[in-house]
Length: 475
Ligand code: ADP
Figure 1: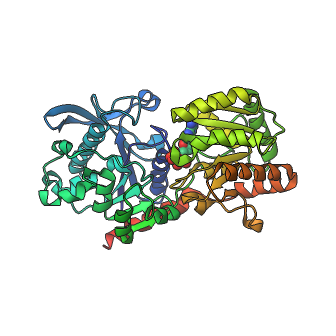
Figure 2: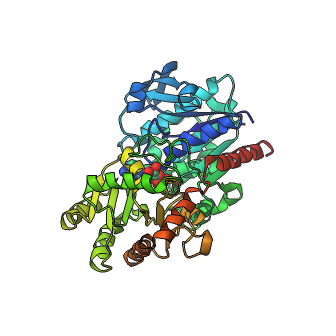
Figure 3: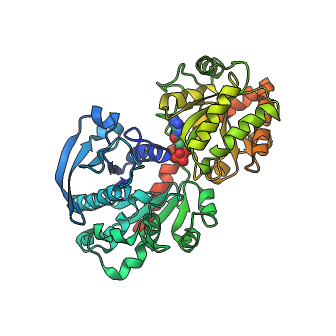
């Protein structure tokens, strides 16, 4: 096993929407360190990184979607930049835009991207030993290389799909089938789920191996996978769960350039104090009170719709003397409710609506508790970042949160606050427990040091991925 290529829509620091970027930005680096060549191919977006980085054009050609031609270039980010080589697929009028997702023609954008990837793989002199796809945006590729006549030469390369989030499946109607390369029609069933073309279902059916980003998420998906439960049950024998890791080169309070003050376990108290004071200054809070924060997308899966009621009841019903800070964006109804609440609870509750990488790092380093009332959490990276920075997570009991957080009531081993049921009352009760921990100064301080030592680094997970690749060779 010498060469892997990851196919992804995101990769940190080139383009990030969520955890997918963090994983694809870290895993190849750690695989390279284990002695294998690990590369990434992703769409080119008009982002700061692509504007400010010198890129070498290694291929230009034209791709067709039905009768429409699109010129494209493949640009290389040299290995010395990120520790692994990245190929950016710049398709004129399709991928070269600012946002990663959310356009009406996302189907066209990602279908064209995957066709270019297949063409590129065909031209590669030293072909990869494994093609590793991530989420539905890359789910058609395993089908193309298995059944399209043009890509026959790639047919025997093992394929892997990592499911970071099964909620999104990228489905579209069969009238777009003319975008596809000519393929063996007796395999049309591989594309279909619920009378539509479903790229996630297609990948699940076609790939040699499926991985999910935590072991518990794999079990959950058999029961709850946005319609794909029976398919995932069927494909269970070729599936394994591998927990994501944390990239300590990006997420290290000692060296993180985005922090107000860097710190390690030795000076955690003064380091976290400086970051907390900055936050309190910025958002009008009292630095002596426990500060509870939420960082994430406002979507149903993250439980963000519950936040307005959680904030109200924390102050009104539970009467807790805490401050609450939210960083995130998404659902507009949640946003407008939060705007209302902010006016009412000035100095107790505040937020930053939007995406802000720097602020997120300072929050991990300065706020006391991280609230994650998720209904679905395939792995969850926030809680692992929080631990590294000495912030105690308050989490629901789903997916990767089960695999990474042990309740503080579990004796010496415990370090987090788990919420048994996802309801406003239970979440407020979790915040109440957090306030109690905060007020028990010596206990709080020892737990903070304990969690900073937990090893969730990529080395462990990267090795599991490599073992999985090796198992494919023996298939
Ligand atoms: P998901 O990928 O489902 O959104 P993860 O927990 O896997 O959730 O990853 C979330 C990542 O995105 C973390 O690095 C988190 O800090 C970051 N993040 C989410 N929302 C924001 C935001 N509004 N501003 C800055 N970073 C954010």
